[in-house]
Length: 392
Ligand code: TGC
Ligand code: FAD
Image (cartoon, rainbow, N blue to C red; front, side):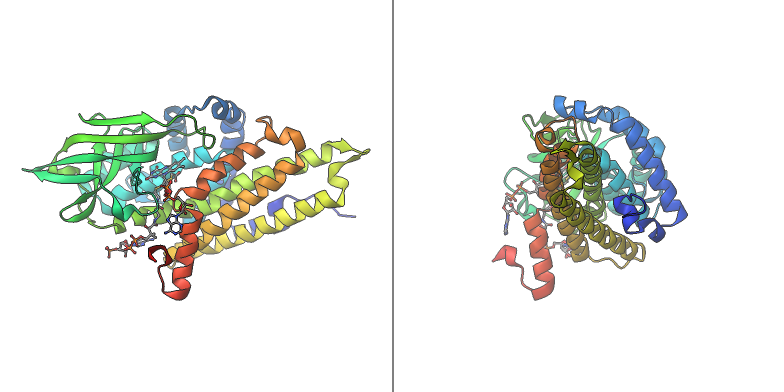
């Protein structure tokens, strides 16, 4: 007979691998998610809306927007602390983690890594508080996995830049104050800070999504958008710019997806202990316990891998293919886990009364964005063979 009932994390003594500061940050975010996100998120998901502006200010007060960046009002937290924050946020909903990822790891990271001192001073402190929201435009309607083919173009006109093109599937596009837009120029691929009230800029909401419904997704249209010379990010002129930012956001996801998995496992265990069939709770049946055991073992393995990658990142040693391994592993495991949890909840599992199917459908987007599962497979394959199979 087991002594005490343990949580998925307790079973692996995960807390022993974390510092006091990391435990404290995790606790604060978990409390915020329990109080502010979980009670309302099913309704936001159902209605396809999210009070993103309000939440951004609250998340700014919590210190999570750009929390892993140094200076300019950012907390300068360690990589593991940031990962744990993403995990707790995604235990609420992938859309909330997306809001934070896009702001901190994509839009702010681009300015932090490749912006001028003036650009950093102008934008980062107000982005850290959530007063200014950013989005990140890399994907285009015809260039998703292969951003190198992008058609959006920026041309010099005197001292100005003029941008034309479109970006697709852009998180926060309709509510952003600035868009970091990547465009082809005569000097290579460059990043531009585009105020969203610039003439010629428009954002069109994507409707009818069945996934990430508590998140805003948009098409950005750039029709002769004229920008001053200092709108360009001066420190990069190749795909290295956006891919550097993607490393950060993918890193957040390799922790984040596990939050959706954990919340689903906890929900399925609670349900299994309460739901009685054939005179016993379904958690008492061996087939159900096998499901719990399989899921929790995979969850724990993925979390330990995430922590290992986090510690490598803190030491400045992590390589992009290791981040690919993490995203590949966490998202796949999380998706499999949510599907299994859904089966434990039976018919109730298909409703928004429980978080499981919402997490599952969100993870379908997470499986695709920030590099599809297949692209990460091929990045790992390239690291093992030296062959870029995606170009063959
Ligand atoms: P390649 O020719 O190999 O390299 C071009 C330049 O980039 C450098 N580089 C990297 N730099 C930093 N980090 C990495 N991971 C890098 N990989 C390559 C490279 O050194 C080179 O630099 P330079 O200065 O010498 O020119 O690039 P490629 O065209 O062959 O691309 C490789 C590939 C397939 C891995 C890349 O295209 C890729 O990752 N595709 C997937 C696209 C993607 O992930 N899109 C995500 C869009 S954003 C998003 O989904 C947000 S979701 C919202 C949310 O998070 O909530
Ligand atoms: P495609 O690239 O057309 O791929 C379709 C299928 O073909 C996939 O299975 C893929 O793996 C496979 N495939 C493609 N090439 C190869 C190959 N060489 N070998 C084997 N298989 C291949 N983008 C942004 O820039 N900013 C954002 O904020 C953003 N937010 C998003 C939010 C949501 C909700 C979603 C769903 C997407 C978002 N994206 C964003 C876009 C996302 O990054 C792309 O959807 C993703 O990169 C894949 O591109 P695609 O959808 O065009 O698929």
